Amino acid sequence: MRALAILLLLVCTSAWSAPVSWQGVDRIVAIGDVHGAYDALITLLQSAGLIDGDGNWSGGSAHLVSLGDLLDRGAESKQVVDLLIGLQQQAPGSGGMVHVLLGNHELMNLTNDLRDVSPAEFESYGGIEGHRELFALSGAYGKWLAERPPMLRINATVFVHGGLPAGVAELGIEQTVTTFEDQLHTVLNLGPRLASEGLIAPDADWISAAFDAPDEAGQTDDQAAWIAAAKHELLGANGPLWYRGTAACHALIEQPRLDHALQALNAERVVVGHTPTTSREITRRLNGQAYVIDTGMLAAVYKGNPRALEITAAGLRALGPDGEQTIVPASPEDPTATLTTAGFDSAYESGQGQELTFTDNGLKAEFLAMNERDAQRAVAAFRLDRHLGLNMVPATVMRTIDGRTGIVLAKPGQYMSERSRQEGGYSRPNYCETGSDFHLLAAYDALIGKRDRGLDDLLYNRRDWGIRIVDNHTAFSSQSRLPTYTQTPTLAPLLAERLRALNADVLETLLQDLVSPRTQRAILKRRDAILTWPRA
Image (tube, helix red, strand yellow):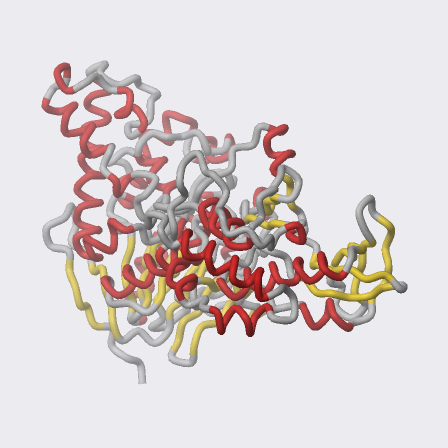
């Protein structure tokens, strides 16, 4: 029997009255960033049973949720928007619903930020001027998009394009939606007016221009209202459309923030897009409370896959054109058993060690010959890293190969060194709203007594900038003094909690076969000093 979707909350004071919370929905299908990949979207919706061969709604009482970013980069964004507008009109006739959330690229198009509109898109909308007319607040697409919410909740799941920054948790869903709508409509009403009066450059986007506006003394009332709205945090980098922390901030920093947000929003999980997953498959992270579903559907740009997340009483599963797909855990399966005993093919001798490819699963690794003491320290670094939940040290085991003692460590993959980053002039982003994984690294290096972290043993994943650290066998001195920092790092509360739990008994159990009791005592003394750092 089809369950009745019950409206729980209504936004009654905003620019439009729209439900922001639903309960009793039997089947939810969520899609991430489409970016004009019309053919891939059609195939995906058909395989999910939501549309028929003619592109009409066939999903019955299901709720389809688009997390936004329908626009930009892909050539067929107009077809995508037209399809969803049509489905949104058809679905209620079968008891279903189509929810389209705003993404940051919809916000950009609405506010005259057209840097990512492809030439083919402009052409489909009748050129630049045609695009501006259609995406104005009075235009067909602008009016429709301006009525899309930034987030909503269905059953126990929150859906939002970017993520859940602290401001959303403090406001709650209803107030976030209301405030966001009010600020957006202020920008959309005043931006064109101020541009027509020559107070904003005609081709400037109406949000960025606010940061270059005259100071308060030289502002008109309209300018002051526009600037305040354009600079509002909900429309900015730490707003729900742009925030990447839920998808990419280190778990030791982001987990407590997400726990607080979900509790405040009366939800069990959040589903986000915006940040393409490294695997280009739907990824589960933060204790399974966050699902990242931007899988790079526009293959020509992101080299990804069309994927949808289905939520029913039976659980969550990923869907693709060929049926059920894998949901990838953020932390991959522990490969230490393979590294320790499995057979391998030797690929070649590199400059530092022997490259290995394991026969059964194709796992790439590297064997580095070293004395037993250094090998033990390298393994100790790995164990301590995993115990604390840092996941910065590649899986490391001791092994003897061809009569040589050393370590086998899982290859970090496509990484660049800090030296290469500096020489290439790359800017490394910080996806956390507060704190940084560099501070996590500082605490870890201080704990293990690693005083010589260099440009070549600090590595970054080329896709998500995640940190990997190698050459940890030079750590674990018996000195208890911490390195001298030009500015004391902050300590993430969750890491502080885990450090406090790292007492002598735990440390002995963890490392007794690898480092001496004297070294263990030094670790605990360094831990005590780290715990005096200010909290993030």
